[in-house]
View 1 (cartoon, rainbow, N blue to C red):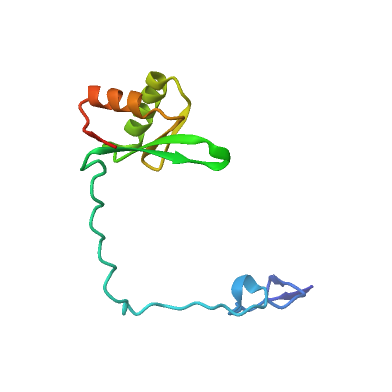
View 2 (cartoon, one colour):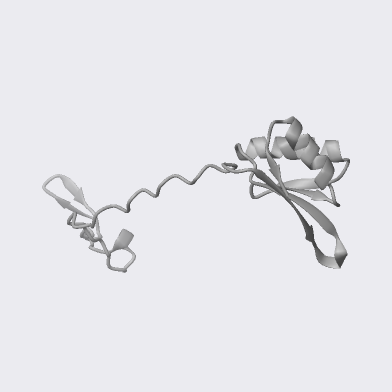
Length: 126
């Protein structure tokens, strides 16, 4: 080490700042925006409320001749539809699920489901 006017100088020269990303040899690809973006996308209109019309009951045949009662057009949020599905499963004594805003019940449960929905004040159309 060499002493220069009372200060200690290192044996290695100082490294200059580089224009590479984190000094790893790859050049940076920094780009600045000029604010020339187009108009923002328009806000889509809110979806129509589900259940605006009557509640519909239909019978579907699934694979291997399984029959499923599907209840569509139910008003309310997903949580309310799930609660209604639970109630319908209990009333009908059948299994089922709430899927995509509809309730699916195992078997032909149209009569029981229509009576339960009418008791809740919902118009039912088959």
